[in-house]
Image 1 (cartoon, helix red, strand yellow):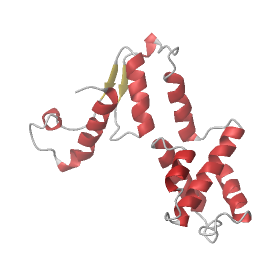
Image 2 (image 1 turned 180 degrees about the horizontal axis):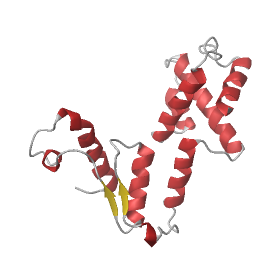
Image 3 (image 1 turned 30 degrees about the vertical axis):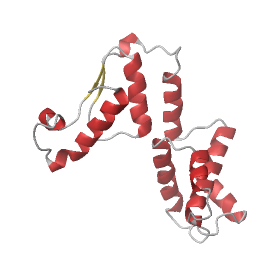
Image 4 (image 1 turned 120 degrees about the vertical axis):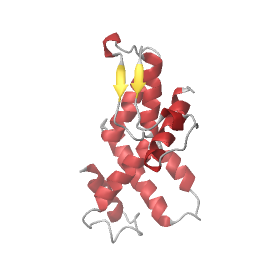
Length: 173
């Protein structure tokens, strides 16, 4: 896998002193892959992460993670490849194009069974809602609780937070 190649290359170059002893251990690349997917889901690009951490007071471990992410993303782009999260970025970029027309046959579009959305997913929902004739998002919980008319059941708290993020992303009340 590409991420393994990137880690091995950075270890050989001596740019991962903090993670060098962990780099070959089982599961290290899997955890990095999950970490990068989280960053991408939050729409954090490598340059943004590096700029944020480009301070000597930041722990070396964070700067090394940023270096891994940057090199990985560089190789993806240099080869015109995309990982799973990158496919989401590319799809969003396409749908956000002013010339992109949402096919009429794809409406109504239903989103059901989600309890949360990444920033990329929220941006995609907003982009699709601007283009599609009808978009429906369902969440578990009480509409009265969402409006603040009754207490929120603890099991539904995440759905209430998600509803707030959706309202903000979609610009609805």
